[in-house]
Length: 109
Length: 112
Image 1 (spheres, each protein chain N blue to C red):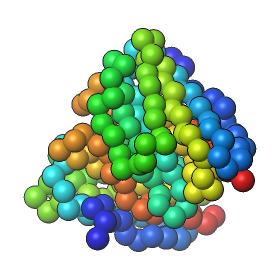
Image 2 (image 1 turned 180 degrees about the horizontal axis):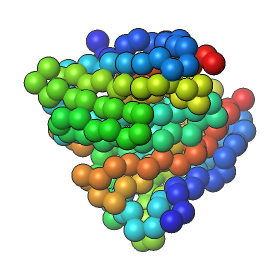
Image 3 (image 1 turned 180 degrees about the vertical axis):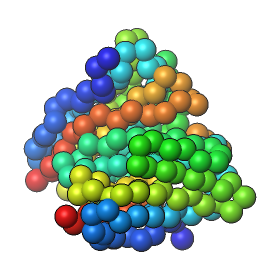
């Protein structure tokens, strides 16, 4: 079983819809990252969080350390949000990033 | 401030050859990490350098090596290339261990 699991693997939404991506992990962590990767490969770090909730524009990330679970929400989704979203955890032991398999999001106009 | 840069952006090599990829971190960042991304395995951690010292290493064979220079620029080397080494190689820099990572655009390596 992978140490970091994301769901769903693929998601299609209509423009304006609310999107939620989930990430569960099984190891002790010091931080969790949400990353965005557009076609072509470039990765952008969206959030780094170790507790609670962070918001940036239409994006919200939450983490529940006790339940080892994080969610990324996209409000009022737009076609430019179409990308692969990747959850990555910084393991407490070893300080290495371990990645989930990614969620491919397609937002249709 | 300039972002993380990687050179070259694209590379085609033949099995058995070796390759060197370069990464220039954001100015002031002393940590550089390298990752491999393939369709089958996804993103995997290769190694991290901080102040010229390797701090962490992923589960890759010894054919994969790296180094960091005094100006924080880093190189990774893959010797005796195999078809399975075809991948997008990403580097990321950060100021220190508890800081956010910033990714470069990647080098797409194709081994034929």
